[in-house]
Image (cartoon, rainbow, N blue to C red; front, side, top):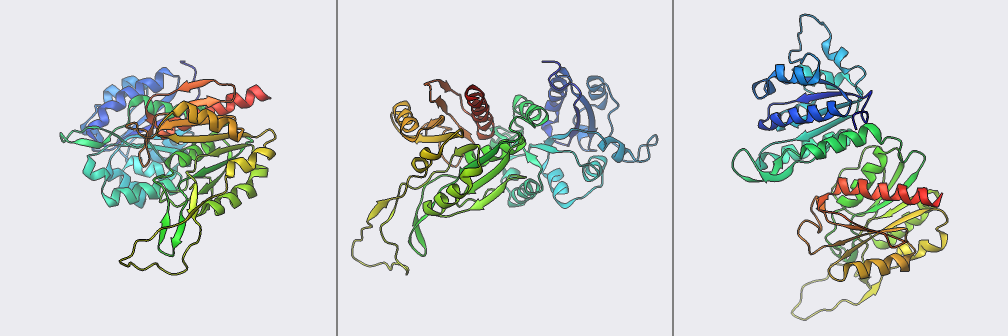
Length: 401
């Protein structure tokens, strides 16, 4: 345990949030795993956590001032050699500074000077987290390759209940560990991921679709890329930002998704079919907008082509993972799909459970492999579930080699 992060250098940035006291435990955990941790405080964070305590825990002087009398270019020397910069907690104010490149303090300057990976864990009140400016700033940072551990839902310092609470220290530690130790887990693999819904047009302005947000597929693509894979993401309509380093191909219909999957399938070594592909589409789509009348209308439907079934005959040594979102007979339906489609693994979840449905950040799943092994998992963030799924993929791949 103590050697897991041995030799890794982490720069821990702490900003002025009431959640800053939790950074003490994060620091202690990182140190207990062997990491060398250097702490940098913003001027506002200085009011929430004592530098002397952080110095004792880290074993290094704690820096807060850009103009250190003993070091003329401290923002450059601190930035050198860091394997990861972790900012926890990150306030709305500091996120805005990062988005605009503002560097009026030590932490802001070293972020501009460093080429190290950056991971931030925001913490703020629910109204601030939901503000359009914060949403835009977070999306912009993600596009630049900065990774985000989204805040959790819970009681906040304002007395309100909602999303904005700093992620659990264990979640932050797991993400740091994953970034620092799993960079080569999928090296050499080509991972093809499908994500999001499809839209089957009724007319030029209406369509048949479903409630999939794409969050599970995007989490898989993000983690697979973090673990060293080349990742191709075939995505239905979604507003999610493209994970850094991932090749994204946008599609709309089930037919378009099938075409792109088949085009990239030969090069893939791992296929993760997380998209919620429409099972049916209108038999005929109107070329013009259908006008409202006093008469009842009906739409004739026909089945879309099954993408997974078409891949089975060309499987070879590929690992193929399917998903089963069910409302009843979860295991029975998932196991049937696993067998019918010739899958190596299926991720089954009951979407009627609280915390396991569409359009949310969490899921509750059971992993079932082709040998009948079932791994039930508790409610967790979709990024965390993605790691469980990919670890299972690696295990299965190892068993087959």
